[in-house]
Length: 239
Image (cartoon, rainbow, N blue to C red; front, side, top):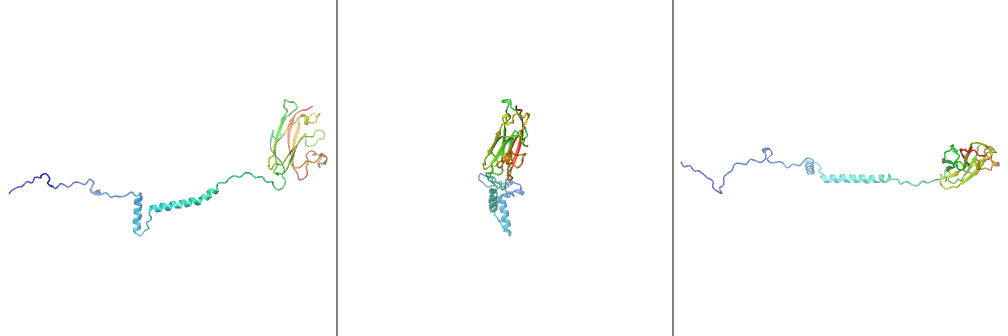
């Protein structure tokens, strides 16, 4: 029997041993899947459900619908937001119906305070500054500075100064000033201190001889008017 030995030559074909696949058998052909959260995967699942009788809505369409909803809601709320912006208006004063009494807005020194005499000159005291108000904008205010009053004393009581504040169309009126001194006090009184009274009326004062109350002849007004009194103490002994 003849034995033949086959030797491969250059260019000949020789069957080669099968090569092992680079992946294990169980994953030799990896599936090209997408993550559950991807848009393509979501569209694919929606398409699959649509093929089974469901309604498939592309994700881009759902996103457009949501944007339209939010846009309409924002436009609906816009008028409410615009109405919340209130532009402040300047205060407008109106004259109330009926008559109201005037009042002291503020004073320096405060009402009831003692006014110490100044050293220079020795016959003067501190200056009093008072700001008045009246709700009735058309009322003129008549102000009297009266010494040692009330009650009325024929020897001590006297009007030191009178000031009229015109109507200005506002509740608050301009401030008035008064600096009492020995010239305003009845000489020979011998008192170590004196009362300084500010009487404010929204009507003209009666003449002393026409006043209905004999104890208040220096600042009485008619029944439809009001009088407001404020008093300070002046520590000033005059010869």
